[in-house]
Length: 539
Image 1 (tube, one colour):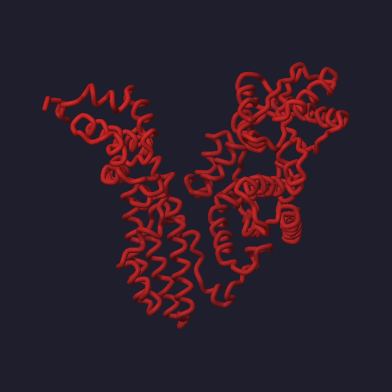
Image 2: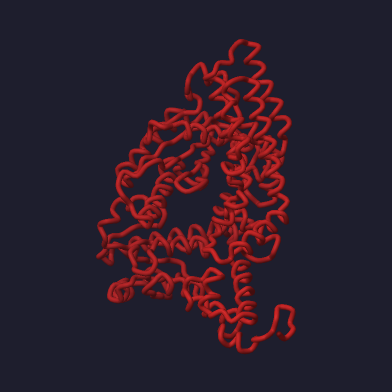
């Protein structure tokens, strides 16, 4: 017997569904109700829920927000969306793909019973499939997330781009993978919105765009998967026999998808189709597709084939493929990259082929490749490479081959030295601590601190927590409260002045935080510790 949860902020609507549907006939033994996303989460944590009937528009957390949480907490739950708002007609088709179905209120009970019956049938099919799986329930719940993480690690080259290394990781993670598999990568990029959208609407539309890609490009789960690379960007990895799908078929699928995104979601989407290759060839292919997207400045709704890429025709044919150089730099083989870069320039000189246009394009491509590698390492590349010496060498690099090589050797050495210092996290942690102590009175953000050490905020957070055992925000709070305690005990400054000195513009907020962590108010702390110096001796 199945359990159903109905979620709607309208009490009448909930009661109508609870009592108007013949749940016994459908095989439902329990019907739970909630009037907000938070109430629904509590019920899902406490009770077994198989089917979710949810209004998409609620004042405190939308149905899509709830479904996103459900996917991480209990992926087996089948969701059906309900709404009476016409504003969401543009997302209807795609949301049907993300949930089991999408119904417009008021829903006739007969129609709802039909949809619920099909959803329960789907649950039964998935249960039967899990019984034949070695990993059963765990695999059915977590396989998509595990496979997605696996491919992200391949793209980011956390897993080395070697066939044996990928196979070993697949086996360790119980991922269905074979060295004989052939994948056609398709990069999907949202380039423009054709109507003004709020942040909330953008989140909903991107969700719909992704689900549409799974339906129109991936078609079925056994044909591959869609990997979210970053906001507004996905990489479809199509696992089908290349002989069964030609370039025209892929192009047609992408064109239909692009048209659907324009008509239903007011989004300009471009697709970049790679060539079939094995798993270890995907990272290099992705770099090439990413470069195509970066070089595309004219078309927001178009399909591009890697094999047809012809930017600056004759010029492009003479430029080296730097995707392998990126992988070598990621693995620390900078000397080999420098040798290959110098050999390329020397060969163009010897063949009387080195023109100013070719050298300029080569320099831009090399810089983009290096920035990409530093980005993978969590480093904000534009900052450590924007010192006066680097800028001076860059300005001169297009003048001659000698100047170009001088710039290349300088920035590669500087980038690798900086990456090495970042990987030696204690030095970074100490720099962050010192910066925090020097700027306690300022309104410090995680981004401000990360910018000071030229790191991506998320990457810095991981390094700092590994080195100290606490988050940056907790350390900042600890330092501020420690200074406040010292000032309260050893000075006659007012509590409001002390709050200002440690970066709290709001006096009441400071008092609450101090009491929360010190178990007494600032005034109580001063009364108890007055006259005690930092060394513990009476004044």
